[in-house]
Amino acid sequence: MSALTTTGRPGWQRGLQTVLMQPSHVSLKRRLVGTAAALVLWLAAWAGATLLDHHTDLANQAMLFVIASVLASIWLSAPAAFAFALACTLSFNWGFVPPRGSLGVNLERHAVLLAAMLIVSWLIAGLVARLRAQAAAARDAARWAARLQAVGEALRDSADPQQQAEPVAQALSELGGAPSALMLLRDQLPQADQADAVWQHGTLDADERAGLWLCLRQSQAFGPGTGRHGEQPAWYLPLRSRGASYGAALMRLAEPEHAADGTRARAQALCDLLGVALQRAVLARQTESAHALAQTQGVRNALLASISHDYRTPLAVILGAASSLQSQGERLSATQRERLAGQIVDEVEQLSRMTDNTLQLARLDAPGVALRLDWESVEEIVGTALAHARRRDGERRLRARLEPGLPLLRCDAMLLSQLLDNLVDNALKYSEGPVELVVRQQLRLPGEAGDAQVVLAVRDRGAGIAPAERGKVFEVFQRGDGAAAARGAGVGLAVCRAIARAHGGELKLRARAHGGSSFELWLPVLPAPQEEAA
Image (cartoon, rainbow, N blue to C red; front, top):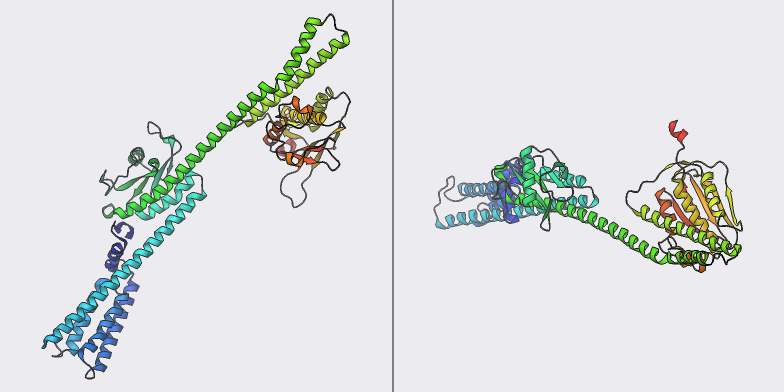
């Protein structure tokens, strides 16, 4: 459990502690290699000193044993290196310093030489041990930084809190040497402890769950070494971000008596990473909710403004015609009365279409809207649209052309009829030539992705739509040019697009080659009822 013996001291001191404790941690193979290398170096120093005997002074011979000690300290642990330096000094004294064959020293300068030899060897061994400790601390810091980066990337790539908890729980388990557990808030912190207000990752007993709730509410760590509830065998760590807690972690400790502040600091850093990710998810949900609320409020305000402005003209016409019939009905001819009654009917129908469009747009923009879906015949939907349109099409300009063998559509027939009513009404208002309603099936070609589709197109030969306006023609309150546009509220095409997308389809605008526009509704073809039963 090397992680649990890490302290809060500087990195090189933690590394030095690791080096000094190596005999209990370093593998047997490495110790054997170090011992063999030290033995070879001692034999080489002895052989070199023997060859130089009577050819040089004792100081040069002593340098051979110092060099052997320095090289051996690279492989040996610090205690072993100190012991090897002492052994080299004693063997040099026994074999080469007069009187030979004993550890006695006759001359003072020889004693000084031996002392200097031992001190230099020990100093170099200590420096090598410190360098190795610093290297170990640097490797440990690099591994920890890489682990933090990996956890951060895992948290960034996932928006699901339960998936975000997995890498943090795994890292805490590795730090503590025992399985960890997490408790994450679903939304706001409740007044009382409620199981359905949190997600739980890992197993917890009743006491541990109560401890996590306490840690979450106090936003403070407790456990061994924290000064709070130190008798606990585990650490309770808050998942913090900017002073708020979004959960709590239980880090069980395999050796609670060896728990150190350095390990807890690393564990808290992991928990704070998760806390930041959870706060980011909460803020994203709040932002999305606020945006949806603002968008809904904006649509409502715009619809109210549209109603107050665009309903004035038809209401004024109705009021004028009705007043004329009421006050001057006896003096008007039958033709005049019929014309005024026709104006009232036309304006009421216009008001009815504007009201339907406005209500449908508000309903389809609401979250979680449910359509009244059923299997419908395309021919019946088109027939309903033709019947509605011909009451307004006195010149009989509208023509329909349907491909034989069309499949049934899974749709809301009332909404599709409203969509076609809007498209046909626009085509009749903005063009003077013939208008076509064409229905065909677009089959999926071999090798293409997606399902077959039914295309309902309303085509005209009017002036068309300028290229600069095509990108925003489906936006709310966008109107065309000309006198016909003054009677609309500018929501018809926006409603059509909302209806198309609510059915999983799309409404597209295509400019025709010789003038005019084609508004095309593309709807997916789903398996027919008999196919599902089979």
